[in-house]
Image 1 (cartoon, rainbow, N blue to C red):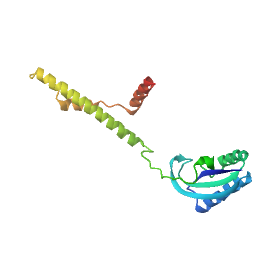
Image 2: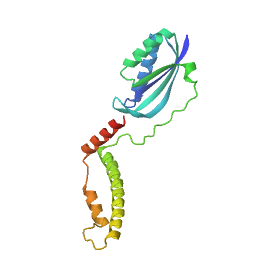
Image 3: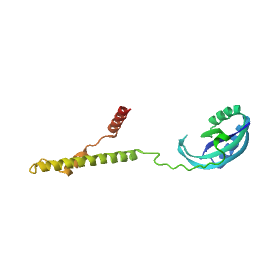
Image 4: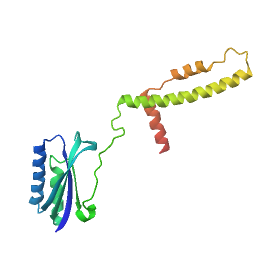
Length: 186
């Protein structure tokens, strides 16, 4: 018999009694399929990197058990269909790296970017493009002023800036242009 390590996640939406009941259910499941549970540790409640079954936080539980290698497939299948287990993983204890490990709380950068956030980024990109266009137009305007100081039709940089800002691209049109550019690169 080999020693295995089972790590599984229980939804944090469950009460402490339900979490304890789930832990005992999992130990009974391991015993049912020929395993012998040695140690069970609740590692804590952590925020998940992404939603799993509409759940954002989960209790991590680590179980060490001994079993024959043919029983692992049965335990794995039973864990997969268990209704209170979000995710699980079974490893041989010698391959898992021992009992020393650190769980680190997930720190999100930008997970849920709403429509407002995306439009702010697009507007910021548009503004930088407009700023570059305004600088180029101002440079051209300065060149044309040097050529003819008497010409009244030459637009001032403020007029060019207003004209460039009026040209706006809809979100759908911008998405189409981005998709077209990406497909050309591929």
